Image 1 (tube, rainbow, N blue to C red):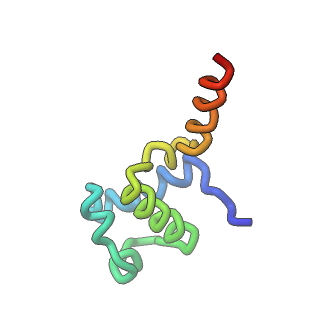
Image 2 (cartoon, rainbow, N blue to C red):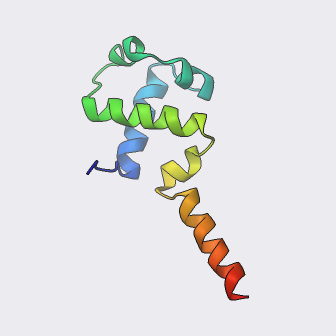
Length: 85
């Protein structure tokens, strides 16, 4: 099973992105593998986090991803509350 990055790991990768000039969602989406490889001290786990950041930004779920949450979990919970009322 794929290991989930913790918040500190995600923040470290975001700092690397910011230092490399990638400071907007648009720049993150335009970042390709060649651009990722140019980031100083980039690791393979960092690359996985960058790809996850790209996916979640595109899906408008970045905040949930950074917080470790899931919209699916929240939707299930709110449906349970509705059914209990």
